[in-house]
Image 1: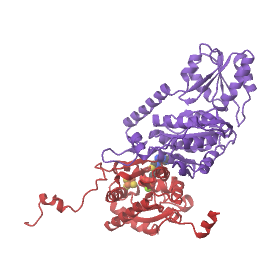
Image 2 (image 1 turned 90 degrees about the vertical axis):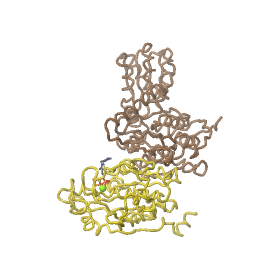
Image 3 (image 1 turned 60 degrees about the horizontal axis):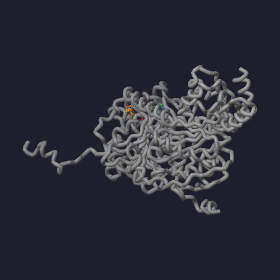
Image 4 (image 1 turned 135 degrees about the vertical axis):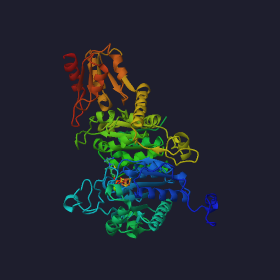
Amino acid sequence: MEDTLKIEDIIKPENLVYKKTSVLTDVPMHYCYGCSHGVVHKLVAEVIEEMGIQEDTVGVSPVGCAVLAYNYLDIDWMQAAHGRAPAVATGYKRVNPEKYVFTYQGDGDLAAIGTAETMHAVNRGENIVIIFINNAIYGMTGGQMAPTTMLGQQTATSPYGRDIDLNGYPLKITELLAQLPGAAYVTRQSVHTPGNVRKCKKAIRKAFENSAKNIGTSFVEVVSTCNSGWKQTPVEANEWMEENMFPFYPLGDLKDGEREKPDAYLVQKLKK
Amino acid sequence: MGDIRLMKGNEVIAEAAIRCGCDGYYGYPITPQSEIMETLMLRRPWEETGMVVLQAESEVASANMLFGGASAGKKVMTSSSSPGISLMAEGISYIAGAELPALFVNVQRGGPGLGTIQPSQADYFQATKGGGHGDYKLIVLAPSSVQEMNDFVDLGFELAFKYRNPAMILTDGVIGQMMEKVELSEFKPRLTNQQVEETQGNWAATGKKKNRERHILTSLELQSEKQELHNQKLQAKYKQMEEEDVRFELINCDDAEYILVAFGVSARISQKAVEILREKGIKAGLLRPITLYPFPTKQIQKLIPQAKGFLSVEMNAGQMIEDIKLAVNGKLPVEHFGRMGGIIATPAEIVEAVESKLIGG
Ligand SMILES: Cc1ncc(C[n+]2csc(CCOP(=O)(O)OP(=O)(O)O)c2C)c(N)n1
Ligand code: SF4
Ligand SMILES: [Mg+2]
């Protein structure tokens, strides 16, 4: 066909429609096909590039599948002990308040072993960003039950399905965190469709912008897939997530504002 | 000359931190060291030097906050007492693995478990043999006076930064709670971000500049060959500490035949015991290790030709004695005397122990 673009034309700068952000390194990611981690990494990297804050951003990687996140984003990194990323981020941010600091944590990391560090960092209103990948399972260690695992969901340590009597209830940690006065922005997103990817990126951008305004903690949960852990194909995993997780973990903002100011009575009392 | 004051050991730690240009303190209350954070909060150094003071939700968190602050190339510290240090073991191991400088203070109390709030030296093993998991060492300083509580804060930071390794001041409830005359250090300004960049910019996470590779502060290495190289690098560092930074004090050792080895408050009491023994005509001396790691092994070996025996005086069931025995290597008797449960030995008890365990034995 006459009017088909030739390869020489396609690669012309004026025909560029999409370019990998330079904040992502060229290292191939270790994540399984269909895993949400890679998409969220890309979004964080794009936000960092678009805001022009590469030199001023420091990430904290968790223990979990994203432990090696530092191989993929071209910024300075700290690698925290399991669950301690919010404490590490706090320690850094307090002595370097002008930097953008974010943690990137899985559900085992953030909502089981690191519950205390997460709650208290948010309650103090640390001016950090927390990216929370909720895939309802311990991906890295081979698919064991997480605090967020759904009732009836089969995992390596709940082989007959999560049972309330044996395992308790799935933990809606994001709802808990949204109650805390130190939180500025608490939202739940997903990255399973192009539309959701765009929304999620907006949320991440807002979270990073908040952290420069010193208005409290910004927390972005991404309801995610772990097709390896769930033993599903990527397509099945997306469907399973929509069907089973979204009703229990509904998408949308839980809080959007800034950390609470003490009410007039308290201010009066504090003055005494 | 610096200011001369009459102060509690714990308060001096706080004052010394402010004066040496510390950037951040993160802690959690526990007896017998709570005065450290209390003094800092009263002093409000953030208004004076910009130093941050933060009460954490636990010792697990405070140790990991140190990981963050230290990653920025800043001078950060915490303090606790025995049960709290156990909780910090995770953070300390990660800090050692990632090669970060940080200062820990352990004002020891008796254990195991919740134990007692009375003084003890039962965390010698925990401090000198690592405490957390993996092959690592802490630089361990043992002050035996309130003056040294002042001096070792600065020294602790100096050594921590020299080796990019966690350092610990291992003291006890006596030195922490005791009031003594102290000459406080002169004020040193905190480093500016520019100065941190100049001095620590080759490794710290100060934000990735265009002209350098990213800095990744991690203790993770998935390839065994590389992890072994990392372990070897750490071991070489510890070897260097053993060569360059052993510190100790010798008291009446020139002609001593019976040598007491004691640190911290036990050294103070042992010094009195040496005096009594000398009055009795017994040639006693005291070797006081100041660095418990690196341990003054060579100094002990130098004393072997003149000595008839060693007595390790510790407020525990016998921990440092193992390092003395390793140094002496069976050439002479090495005995232990210690009280536990928070009981402080008397000089008379120590004299008796020398007479019964070394001379009579
Ligand atoms: C103290 C400690 N306990 C347990 C582990 C083992 N471990 C590694 S990753 C992990 C779970 C990670 O799950 P999650 O946070 O959900 O991350 P995902 O891999 O699913 O992204 C566990 C239990 C560890 N590394 N450290
Ligand atoms: S195990 Fe799960 S979370 Fe980990 S990379 Fe694979 S799909 Fe992603
Ligand atoms: Mg998970």
